[in-house]
Length: 108
Image (cartoon, rainbow, N blue to C red):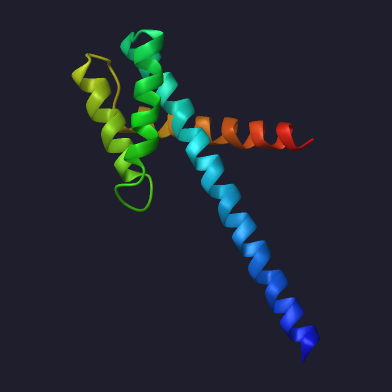
């Protein structure tokens, strides 16, 4: 029975570690996409930092990426950037790949 309990604890620990890693990657992605959007809007370095943080915070509004996409699209369009939802989603996917790559490079 202890072998089963040990295995169960190991699975739970791995699940928790995987969830933590995914959370960190998503937060990194949100910071990267926030920096990208700020650059598109022509923000100053100080404004860029604050904007990137606001994108990270926006992700806590609801599960999934829709809250981040809504924020980015609304802000970019309001700033006069010529972009649509597909463009934002494409940029988000690219930044997710970049965030994963950064974590892999950091772990090596």
